[in-house]
Length: 461
Image (cartoon, rainbow, N blue to C red; front, side, top):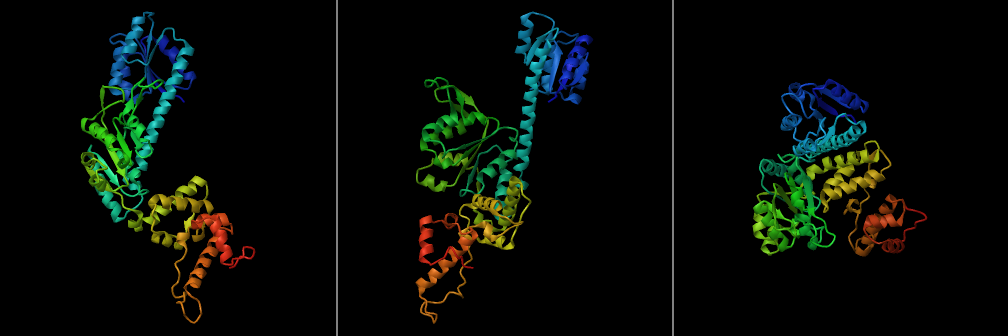
């Protein structure tokens, strides 16, 4: 990949020589014979790197590099020098040069440097592109749903992102707490900084402190120094998921880090300042945990500056169709199939389901439906959930002791038989898949088939 390079040398022959070499590698070169011209054209060029002579009239290459770095601090600069004095090279490197080369320039050495810099530029551009994509993905208008419950979330979030204060997100599993945490980061002034996540419930307590605060070198045999999540999040946001699962001892250390804005690695007595915003999340009743002495009240108050409660999906019924359509589009694209529609009856069933697993459960249901559907529309059969079986028509169920002679056990058996037949038919009479759908064992399916007198060789309509 070619990069834009600004070159500066008062020797026209050197300038042309370097330009010819760089052009061989498809780099775009902007040569300048005076430092004044280079400074004047810098903004227009917006270079990826610079190659400048050490000794030039009126300004040294090191001084010119400092002028460039005032405008673009991370610009890689290679210093050229005709001198063999190591002091020139040392001065250049100590002043912030990427590297130095002696004249006449060795082509292989220049190409090797350019390959390294070009790769750095590529990675930098890729990181910028990814950050832009993340910013777009987590814009408020990209969060699916417009229910009143979600509008309350947006209202608090809008206020929180304008501050540096901590945010506490509560709600059941699968309600989208991490999505809101990322939205809080990417819509704030910290968007260009890192977003670091740690799941406090997924890491053994004995290792959690090291993950959070880091460790010093040689604290144990063969152990090397490692930065913790607090350090890695410096300049950005630290998302502490399932914070309610931390021990009280670790909570005390987190509280100190938040209060002092500094951390100490395990094995070190030297504190390091960090500039972070902590966004914490939990699916437990954290206020009750405080009452039960399982969560420190002082840490709770420190975290609970802005409290966002994510409502369960059952409280966002008006959002369900929008979410389902979003997931249909997502998984059709991932599977490389034409966009599928949803049967209106599917939408109605989705709206009336309790969704104990919330949005995560809805997404998994739609992903499975897209994968199993063989038509251009997702049907009830594609959903394949026993929870979607039609409710019994009470008008069709006779009361015990009525004239048809059926008692309650017989009525229940009839209804169970219909449910089982419907599930078998949806799963093409495969008992293992039917058992999975109905949430029972294959042995139970076999027993029920035998008990209810279902003939698998001659499926009933």
